[in-house]
Picture 1 (cartoon, helix red, strand yellow):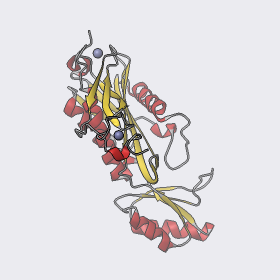
Picture 2 (cartoon, helix red, strand yellow; picture 1 turned 45 degrees about the horizontal axis):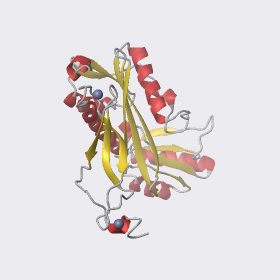
Picture 3 (cartoon, helix red, strand yellow; picture 1 turned 135 degrees about the horizontal axis):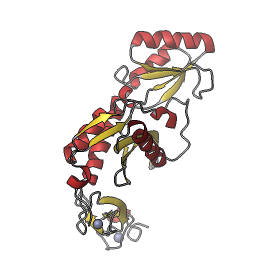
Picture 4 (cartoon, protein in one colour; picture 1 turned 30 degrees about the vertical axis):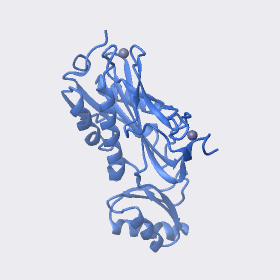
Length: 288
Ligand SMILES: [Zn+2]
Ligand SMILES: [Zn+2]
């Protein structure tokens, strides 16, 4: 018989394996839904060695694997047995590649029961970009578009980082931006300026991480109707929403399938927006 949320998590302290203040976004969201005793950042964790945004360390594995490795590292250095880690990336949004999206992963590692829980969240709300600039005016124009100084910036000579190149991170005031940009432009003819994507330097990303944590907590606290295990989570979007004109099953999502990690039970839940039929314009029969 699966164990209840209270038996699994009751009174335990959650370690947050993060360097960048992310415990503020993650801890409260999980505390709200799980019967935890508290949360704390793991101080000695070195998550940057798993990949950094500003190019010095390239991530070599997929984000879920990297995130699990971070959580295990956090458990090792802290001796804590309940650890959450986060892994974020930015890139073109596949259905509309000119839009940048922010993908965030969270992994909760329970060393006691040897369980790994995870959640992926993709948001179109992203302040992220970079530009090669030959003048201070161009740097300032870019900064304004990226909601500087609320969102901090990174400067270096070229987009591609190579050993020995200076990298100035966490630029948060106009004077610091001006002097660093002028020095780089004087030495190299131009400079690369980009948004600092570390969570504490990018409040939009911090918000997306908080949103990810809230959704993850909700999934963790959803219990399997067959065996009562937690994390009865959405594993699949099931296509086949019927056409309103002819009834043919279209490619559109008909239901979201929840699956139990413990007993394999599945349930198809209707769409949250209540939509039960598709417009004939999106039907392969009515509108081939
Ligand atoms: Zn179950
Ligand atoms: Zn149709």
